[in-house]
Image (cartoon, rainbow, N blue to C red; front, side):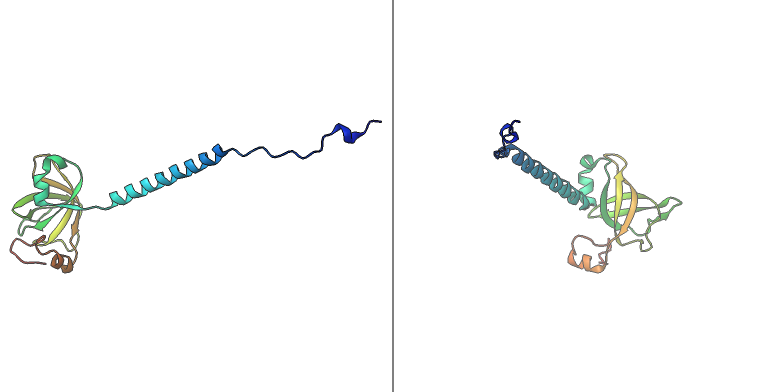
Length: 160
């Protein structure tokens, strides 16, 4: 009867060398994923910062703004508010310029003449002074205006 130990080689075999390429590939994939997450977060943060244009700025760059949606800041002219079944229409002033606003949706309770507001919407064309608004935002308390006295004033010179 043959010896069974002689037929099998039981000497230990060294493990095959690890592939360094596999480790570098993993690191590369993790770096790409991290960069993708950072890019998405930064874009999200940049787009969440929603600034507004003053009427002077918007009127001077109407061609560039076109009919894109943005926020417009100004003061509601007295005796121009016309409440409609769709919302309200009124004139806003800023500097020496004025814009007609046709706002759809009900205005906030604090909405009134001679106060600073921000409206969100778009111009009807690149040359129009009519602004179609989907939202009216009443500006915050007097502390904002006190901090920026030259930026927002009512047409009669008062500061609210």
